[in-house]
Image 1 (cartoon, rainbow, N blue to C red):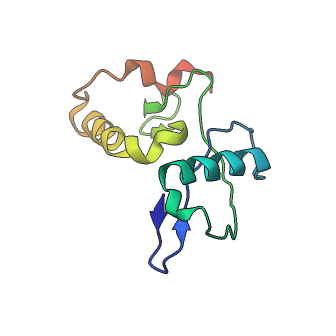
Image 2: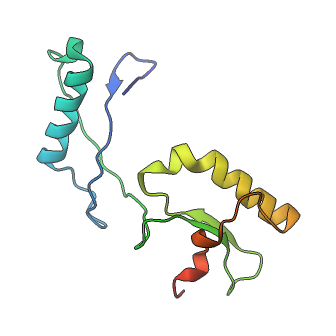
Length: 119
């Protein structure tokens, strides 16, 4: 949960996997609001004014894609972090930068190779 500069609150997100469906679900909204009130009881009487949805990029094995794409020389990717993209962006960027500049990252990223899937 975070407060905008206008004073409204933005509350959470779900872990719903709905493919390319960008519609909100009442179940998802209800769970988010109940959990928010659990942690912040003072907001229980606030008005809910809107909901928005987006896509959650993820891979079939649940691991992100980090590395160079073999079939496109010089094309590097860091994607598919599911709901953790914001939190993992700094380390993903660091590892990708090391790979590009040094030829090898400081952590083994073989498990994250984008080449593990047929492109």
